[in-house]
Image (cartoon, rainbow, N blue to C red):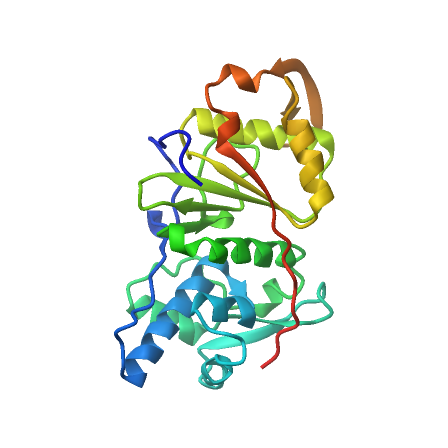
Length: 276
């Protein structure tokens, strides 16, 4: 996605005030120890940012397949650098997260580990796991075009109804938001989301939005609402969680190139049952 507005005054930050740098694999490395250290660093950084992941996604982060990376991840488990946990929402499929030893390695490497997660009990009943894995897959698909990423738990943008699922930074010095929709929301929440991003774009917190959809009919539904000449505005009441009509309408075409900042894509994420 090319920037439709240049983001100046972005107030999004990652842990310790910094996003996660998307480090590239070094093709010149030849010695097994150096290659393993590089792979370990990439995996630990990813788990620090996203809290947990799957073998499949982490293998993709390394540019490998599940099969070719089996021994590497098995060794990390045996060395207790990472650990497995099961999710009650995915037929108890297994996923990977940090251990205290893994966090210790990150700390030695100079990473801010204040928000690192090592307790599997906090994740095995995490209801949004499949959504977060889909977001990771979307980020991985775009790694070649961006050099930094911030997951939504670490984004700090004031006065937003909801934070994006992720923010990606381009080497051309602009940010784009990622919004992944596994399920269709109510119309009022959809328009609230459109307005949430529109205001952030107008304030130049970021320069574009990827709206990604697991199901194509949902993409069509969102695009139909998006293309309306006027968007109904709503109030979100934080204390009660209620959404009520504001009685006003927003005209997106009054803002130059605003519609160009939104990109709608059908991008289904197939969940696989990883095992080690």
